[in-house]
Image (cartoon, rainbow, N blue to C red; front, top):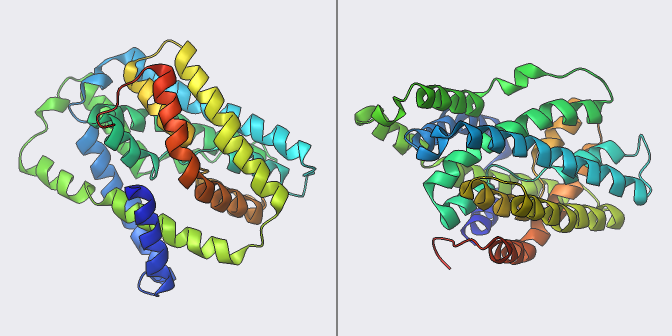
Length: 306
């Protein structure tokens, strides 16, 4: 509920014209370039789970694998509902196949599992980013080119620095005033980012006329089929406990905002991606607690709070 209340707050601030559209670029640049990297450094430096190289590699690999499988499900679903090439099938596949792995997932992971799982989540998200900017871009654009420069961004650099310090075994020595300052800057990243997400969803919801088949199919893929496969993966693939904890939350997430950007940048169908994001976000308010609760019971996990 705190996550969705922050989204609603962002939407209300947009409606009241307090959080103006002209603020979006500057605020998001501040979040991505400064606040989020600081948050990642604060949560990953000194995290014991990152000292296990097999867990790190498995986490990133699962991030990549889950997105690829999700996109494949979305492509098949798009074909079944009659979306043809040129009508948004490929955009639908990427939008419904990619969960909101960052802004919505991180607070939920921290509430349920604490800092160790959050640290590993950022490594998991490396695989997600690679999948989006490689397979996702190629599918939306219909080309073979991959914009690898897009992977050189603040969060990726922060994770790379953390892993480098971990490999040198000096990450737990990063303490004192500088670390405190990093923590103070980073702590506001996700509340602000979630409010911005709510404001943007408000813009999208009023701008696009929904298609019933896209709305229903996207919810089936993102909030039914993908969760089942992700939770089954967590059950039967050998992995660290923290990875199981992460996958339970990833399974319940709605669609990410990223595919809307991809569709705009690479001549896809942004209107299709918008419908997927708005529909799955609204429906996930009701499905998210049930998916997480079932996943916790099926995987025999114990959250920090009931």
